[in-house]
Length: 317
Image (cartoon, rainbow, N blue to C red):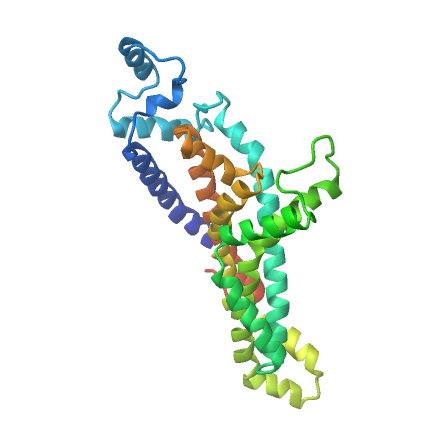
């Protein structure tokens, strides 16, 4: 196991560097002058002042040199200073990562747990009216874009019915657990819709295949009750392909967070990313790209390691 983790880490390092190189090149290829992010619109600079500022920021250096300078500083834990706010980038991201992780973990927990339960139910009750109803709902859930679900959910449950706040992380002056939960429920449910549907469909398919295997019939022939056979034997074997799908949820969750955090004014990394792109705040965009890439690569590694927990036959030599 240890050697496997070392090998994966050695593979992930060049992947991470390639991601940062591509992000750096794409940012440099965007139209406009990067210097504009550092100059207030109401305080124009002379050409000499602009040249001096460009020299001080290192924008006159060749592109490879600028990237290597950024990479060297990033390896030392210095991601630069925000051009928009003047804050340290690492501190700025650190303040936003908590709300994003809270939203992602809640949405993923709802999506995976609900999807597994519905998938097992529809597999056991295959071709019954409840199976057809849940499967139709899952097809609808997969088909609805997350931003559309967010806008519709916000309009119906916040604007029209008033069940949930229209946005924000907490109510001003109230930082209690229940208030934060009240703000969290709607955006988390909106994000979870697709993952409930996707997990349910994969679980149903995998469970139907597992229930048709000889070991299930043998367990039933030995007199074991149907519920332990389903949960203890069939479900455990069905979880192996499902774990792969769950591992792919992390990038999609981060992408969905960009839309949902913007719609619900949630103070997370997704909203910070949108604000930084609009403001051409390159240091923050590069810092976010690095942090998000690390999160995704770590999630992929944990997914691989989960296989050994689910199936003891898997060994990493």
